[in-house]
Image 1 (cartoon, one colour):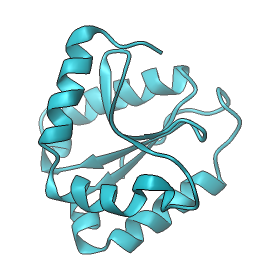
Image 2: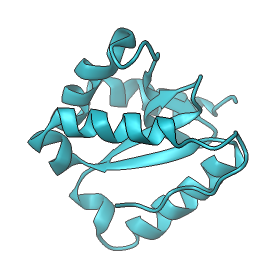
Image 3: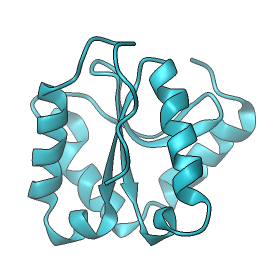
Length: 129
């Protein structure tokens, strides 16, 4: 799916400004290190930029910092997850504090999600943790 030019521009900027938890997770999943799966970082899709995206599994992994739990952000994240689900993409949200505490735990969560992925289009987006 194509993304509008501003979304692509934003994705490029975000790749240069990744947070510490994003960098930690990226170093653990890049180049097929997670069970041979290829992930893209800061991947633009439609109007959104996904922190990490595995096209073969149609899985988006979002590393959520504290801002994702404040004000109207949970509602916006929920709408985004529903939009992605309509595109056949499952969203896994991992708290940034969880990645900082243990990258291995984050990898376990991703593996667990991958083993329970229903067929594309046959699911609703998972709720934030």
